[in-house]
Every structure is written in C-alpha cells, then in structure tokens.
Amino acid sequence: MWHQVTVTARQAFGILRALQTQTIYRHAHTQTREAQVTDSLVQALRSIAGPRNVSTTEAIREQHGHDESYHACCPPDVVVFAESTEQVSQIAKLCNDTETPLIPFGLGTGLEGGIPALQGGVSLDLTKMTTITAVHEEDFDVEVEAGVSRQTLNSYLRDTGLWFPVDPGADATLCGMCATSASGTNAVRYGTMRENVLNMEVVLADGTVIHTAGKGRRTKKTSAGYNLTNLFVGSEGTLGIITKATLRLYGIPEATISAVVHFESIQGAVDTTVNVLQFGIPIARIEFLDEVSIDAFNKYSHFDMKVAPSLFLEFHGAASGLDAQVEIVEELCKGNGGSDFVWARDADERNRLWKARHDIIYACMALKPGSKPYSTDVCVPISKLPELIIKTKQLIKDAGVIAFLVGHVGDGNIHALFLLDENNMAERDVALQTAERISLLGQSMDGTCTGEHGIGIGKRGLLEKEFGPAGMAVLKQLKKTLDPKNILNPGKVFY
Image (tube, rainbow, N blue to C red; front, top):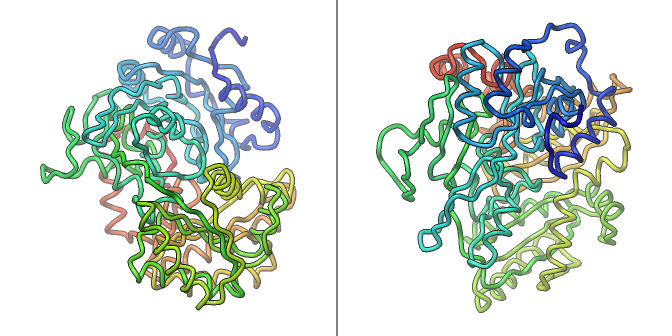
C-alpha cells in the first residue's frame, strides 16, 4: 500500500536499505510484543497529519526502527510524517493522552541506537519540515525547521558569505544534531552544538510548545533564568521534540589550507596535537587516523598514502596569515617525527580529502562486508590524550580484535571503531567488552564516555558511572517532571 505516504528520494533509499536488512536486524522482542497503536489511534493520527502522511507499511516501519549502529531493529507500529509544529503538538498530545510511545526521527544517522522503538508506538518523522524560516546575515544567525539538514543549510547560505561549521560527517538534520549534541571535525575551532544553539522551539510531551530562550530571542548571551536551551541540547528526544532551532553562523574563511602528515609513532602524532594547541594556533581541524584506518582509507577512497599514524589538518583565516601558521605546524610535526607532508590549497582536492575522511566508517565496513559498526566515543582533557590513545591501542591488541582508531584529537575526542558480525556472537561480545573497557578508561582520566554520539541504548550503564547516584537522581527527576507518562523515546538514556 505504497499510496499511504509520499516519500523523498533520501527516504526511498532508506526504505530500500530496510527491505534488504529487515530480516537480519529485527529484534527478537518485536515478534512477541503487542502493538501499542490501535486502529482508532491510527485514524486519529491521519486526521491530524493527513492520510498520505501516516503509514503502517512494513518497509517504512523497518526504516524507522534502526539507525546506523549495530543495535537491532525495533520497528514502530506506525510512522507519521509531520509537516508543522502544530501537527507535532497535536500528535504529542494524542500520544500523551493515550500513553503511546513517541519517538522523534530525523535522518537515522545516529550511532547509539537512539531511534529503535523499544516499546513500539509512533515514530514521528520530521523530515518534511524543511523551511529555513529566517536568515539574519548582519547578526550571524539562522532559524531552521526540524527537517533541514546541515548540507542543505550551507548550500542555501553559499551566496551570503556565511556558513554553519559544525560537521559530524553525516548529513544529519540540524535539529537532530541538537538532540544528540553533535560536533565533529570543526569543533576544535568552532565548538559543538552546545556552543552554537541560541534558541529552540520544543514540543513537550503533553503538546505544549515552548521556546527555550523565549520566543524570538537570538542574542549571543543571556543571564535570564535557567539554561533551558542546553537542557534540551543532548536530550535525545527524551524530554521534548525539537521543531525549530536558531543557530550561530560564521563568515566563510578567506583562505583555507589542508594537509596530511604521517608519523613514525602514535605518540608523535598525539604529541604534535598537544603542541599545536599549546602554541595557540587557531587551527580549524586536526584529525587523527591510525595505520589500520589509513589502510582502509586508501582502499576505499583510492588514495595512496603512507600506511602510518597520520594527522589531517586544516587552517582557516586570512591568506596573509595562514602561511606562517602552516610553517609553525610543519616544524612542530618534524620535531615529533612527522614527514611526507601533502598540502592542499585547491578546493576540489581539499573536498576530496575531507570527504574521504568522513567516509572512513564506510571504508572500514567495506573491509568486512555485512558488518555493523560500533564506535567508542571517549573524550578526555587534552593533556590525557596521549595516554588514552596508547592504552586504547593496547586494550585492542590484548583483546585480539581488529579496531580502527580515528578521532577529533583537537578537542580530546577519540573513536575506536569495531566491526560487529551478527553471525559471530563470540567475536561481537569481545569487541563490545573491549569498547566498554575503553570507555571506562576514558572516565578514569576525568573524561566522558560520549563526546558527541550520545547515550542511546548502549551507554546507559556508563552514564550511571559518570554521574553517580545523586546526579542520576536529578536527571531522572527532570525526565519525570517533563514527561511524567514516559512516552518520549522510552528506554533511551535511562533504563
């Protein structure tokens, strides 16, 4: 019954992927649990969103039951495509009144199992809310609806001389990036979503619509009341549904230079990172790939780089000042055993280089067809980074598994990427145990178990270790206050 819902090309790709993988990833308990959505509720949803925006088709439900992580698919009972905040509010009120689980859905690019419908219910797809509602060029800010993606926004802004720099790699929706507190390769200079969200429109569990900084407010700073904006940034759909976001913009740099440099040892690469930051060089990106990742990188993206621990660098700024920065960094790299510099000033070559870096997860997966990725997400103070990486490599070696080490080392964030085979449970268990040890190691170094991916399903126990009993009690009280019936993305963040 494909006439039930109109889909975009991107959604069609997701449906095809779901059809290909639904048998593999269907969660066991979805076979036996009773549906949470009655026929009368489906009819009520159709009266709110329109018949073409409500689907119970298996393929569309499967598409909305999993993200890019290894976590098993748990399809919702029904998918609703909202087209306005008013519709989202009415749907939330209906689900709250009937105590039906409600799971917000963006583009499904998450890595921690943030969208599987563990208890069934309604998946609320926000990708049809695609209006860029206001651009204030003179104030360097923009307001977007929930379905606007990062690349769409930057394409729209191209002729203004402005851009939004937070870049997690995937072309995620911006409000989804707010929900997970995403960051990525540019965070070392421009910060994460927490530093770049000025205001949000949020629909609460009972349908109430609020603006986290006050309606229409978009100042760069405020001392008014509690910081509701950062309460909802990183809330993963458990406290409210983000329908609009007001974001900081930046001027497109006058000049950009990218580089790759290879090192004799991991220690040399990481020491260089620390040196660059200590010198106060305003570098935009500084990314680490170990020798295993570089090998996958070469094979997938058709490069011929030296297979060695490597740093990917990028400098933004005035053309007159970049050469001096580059010279200082090159000397620092040489002092730590760096060599084989490759500099890229041409935009096409730089874009090719960074696209390949962003595709590293797919490059790794290509070495083990049929696998699903699991990535640790540890972030520590910069001074702890060398010790973290060396000990992480040792944990991986001791476990006898293959893992790819990559990271946004400029802000202390490192990822150990494991490839999980659903047909080899013993290997999968070893990889997950190793990943947990790496996260615990990061926490023992005054760090966090998640720098940018969120908690979702897989890190709920680690969150408890991070906050302790008293902190967890406060978090759970906030959840209970804002969502007393526990309808918003139940089972995520908390057990």
